[in-house]
Image (spheres, rainbow, N blue to C red):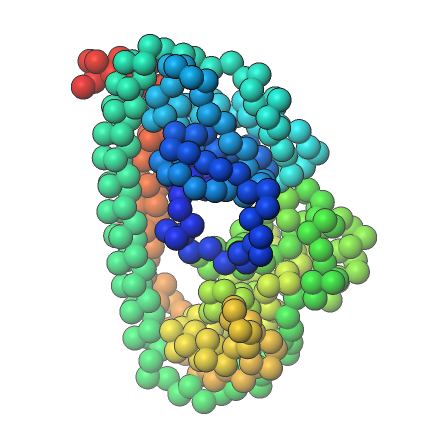
Length: 369
């Protein structure tokens, strides 16, 4: 179950969850049944199934009464539209947003429109056409972003390719350490609005992007003080997408390096942090990290592996010159990527608005046909 794609056969998804040993308690689903992830209804993880199969016991399965005017396509759009997702969020029970639950008795009390069956079909057909057109446009723009990012990587790689890559990273760093062990920091210790924890998902396009809900209170932050970030530190993913990193700027000072991340503090007399980030995230080092990483199911770095990386160490003046040169060469590409991402965001907003307008009767689909 996905808030993006609705209910989808597991064979079509790249999932890492361990398969259940037994299917006791699993629920039968028939074509046209409405399936809701009880724990994620607040973010739209629901949909009408196009398949017959079974789903997790954590899901609720609903089907229409006999002879009820129920077009599966129409109600799939309706329940996944913003107003109904917001209403399900309001009706869900729980203290934290991430732990809200939508229970059957509450869901079944929700009021819904029941237009004539022919009108339901017309709305569903109209939305099928419109959303397919928008989705195709979004996919084309996403491919453009991939091409632009590849172009950007090529520009950066060429700028540093001919340098001497023989300096062990540990010889130009004053500190290399991984985030706290899982036993030192658990998700149930998070406090909304506290000191942010920086895990790999919070390293976005070379920037630190904290999540206010992934944070700890003052007491826990004090216990983890050795993992506090300083300006100029390099915070990097040690799991998943290796080479993903960001230089810590003033707004992120005091944030905490998370369990899935690592911290590198360069000797500023030898390495400019911006230059260190460029070479750390290079394709050359990403490949080296992947080969040296430990862990059978997921790449997993430790401080020794990171410290053994080989990087170039030209003079600080040369480093600053290369950073400025790369910045100038990639500025236009970055602008194009930002504009394309904004176009995708607007397209998704348009998609959502069209669905909401159609299922609530604000578009006459007969005129739009």
